[in-house]
Image (cartoon, rainbow, N blue to C red; front, side, top):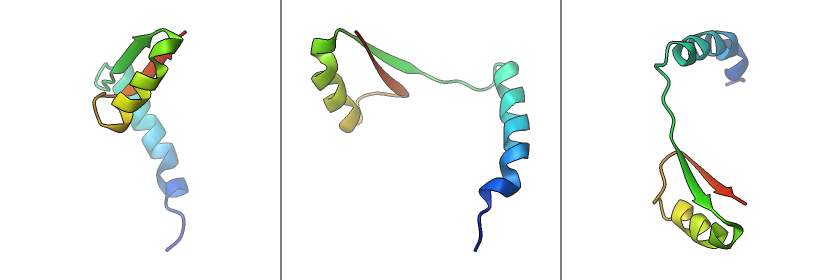
Length: 58
């Protein structure tokens, strides 16, 4: 088999950088405010409630 990541790393970085620069790369962040909401945020993440990165602001 081998390690194919290194074979495509440079190409991926170039293409992904261009997508980000051109606004074609979209992402979403879910924010939960307060440390006391961390357990609920974790549960939401584990049950598939969130989309994108789950962030708990303290």
